[in-house]
Length: 290
Image 1: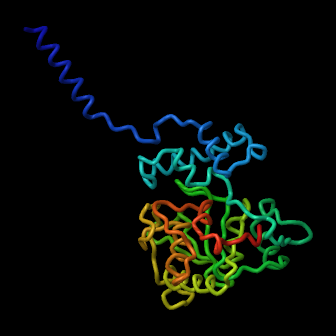
Image 2: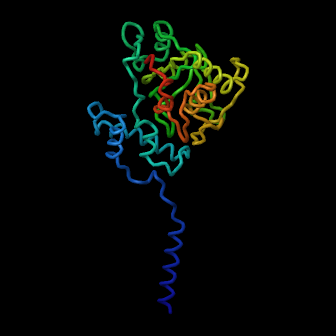
């Protein structure tokens, strides 16, 4: 009887231990980097002759850190696996640009390499020596910073001299902000900044005004009276919380009127894939790189 009781007790403990064990999240699953890399090649995001598997694998050290931070800080759903997440982030690669349609502007006598300049020097050179000017509705995408769960950062010009974005850090309950162009460029001078523009300047201006009046100041003044919480949410069309690329997507979705500018999307829309949601005729072209 004693032996039988011990066996029953062991079975009960085993069952209880099984019940309390947490479900493994996608973050804990093994990652097949080779399969992900081959899928990126198949989709045309990566060209093998330009970025080898080993080079891309090294990049994933940083990408995995960003992903892990997103899981740890509960800004990403635990069921979102790394393979799906890195695809949403364009496999960590910048947006594809048609350089045949790109007019190159220079800063000074050579092309800009802002990352080698101090913030103050960069600010002076950008504002005084560049022949390029930001226009309302321009979309800015940069690789100079990342947030937990997001590779890169993006913003929208809500005026000829102002940039609207959600930086992610700082006050997350009130995260939307407006900076002057020179202030914003100085903050993100550690890497490249690409500027994308709609051919239809009328729609772009309309969207810029919508963004300004709905995501910063309802009166169009310099004083902010709209406050948006920061959060990486799948609820793409909900006003708040929001994040950098969601704000830009929503500005174009709601602010472009009846024009079919964007494809309807769902879930996450992240900086490096943002342009892929524009209809072909409206897809913004790169007009400048800082």
